[in-house]
Image (cartoon, rainbow, N blue to C red; front, top):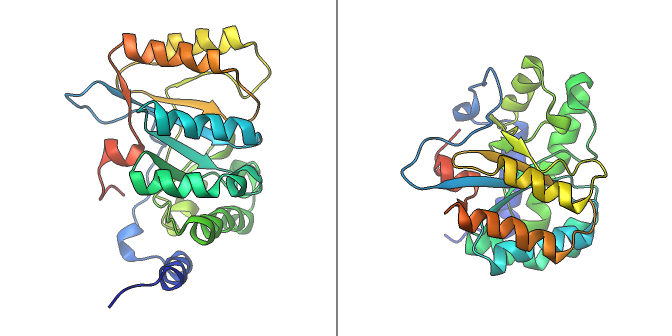
Length: 233
């Protein structure tokens, strides 16, 4: 019997409230690097989504430049709704992956258990309703801060793969485009998880320079699902 989109969303939402026992494991610390591989690869991950133009530019990188990206969605930002059609298209093509980055980017490491659950559940439900997409088990703790209690609570909801990073473009704060490129050149390397942010407009020349770094190092960006496998928990 065919499963309708509404039935899938309802089922995935119910599973979040009462997770399957297969989601029970809790990691003792987040993941910041990819598993070893014979292929030269890294994970380009993008957080937040304050800027609609920046979200669009990153989606275009995935669509037109053969780089697979993982976007950690903060669901309160309208960017994710504005570009819903392109996101769905790229999800279906396997060029992007979505992860849970809370509803409003609240600092989870000092939040109450109830607030942690509200933030993760709210983003989870948005991803289901907007794209029919279940992001589990991948989430990114806000600001990269975490506690064992936070990881435990997230794991109870099926978010058993907390993702931080090995290197950063440094663009969470106001730095020059030259500094963004310099940071990309410094950190992009085989096996690393790299973080950038879709929070302000970025000139195409910056992306061209980053893509050139990837090409000259004979690397390809892969989604976390591609790196860790379909059954990773």
